[in-house]
Length: 288
Image (cartoon, rainbow, N blue to C red; front, side, top):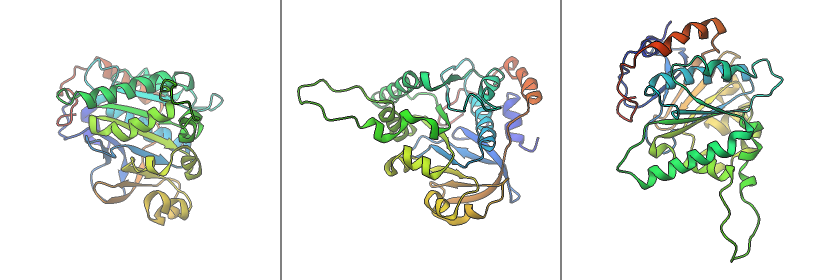
């Protein structure tokens, strides 16, 4: 109720912004709610690191609501979410329940669907790079639980040496993921990732790929991990209900109160979104 811009967007009002926005929480200072802006430029990917998975559900659900509401009506391809939450967790079906109530349809996938979904997204990145005259609508890839996505570990995608006369091997999911992170933002395809620890993050992605995340959120962690992620030990002093947002493009570091996951009752009310006409213009770089 404090976020008038998001409330208006969900009610079908146009959003006056130059790029898609994902609201993440309330600032500590007196200012507008904190949002990540996904411009068409290198590094416009969001990385969230912290061991509190419930908090990760909260941030992703807020981003999903905002970005789905900004997608054109009927654009089923606007959002793809790879869900690596564990089957025995209380929130194992959280995204399935939420997807049924979002204002626009999204594509959900688990480990089994990962290769096909990444193949399609990587192909779309390549197509857009080759056809610069036809700008594509913004698309978003969410990865919940990178620490459990073994197929995305960069060393898994290197393969072994092959003979010179052998046909080139198809790109692995890890290689396709790297392509999406590196080349996607320039053509309007952005990635949002949650990983639990810096140890698991470094085990999955190499340092070169980590540079593709120009937007970062840190929950409470050690000062050493905070320095590695944000170039400051500040996240080592965070309480359990606070986080830090870093924007490389803006040179900005801001403490905020992250949004929590919406209750089922609130999601039930949100089903009315599906009946609302789309008043804003189609999502694009200039008008999300």
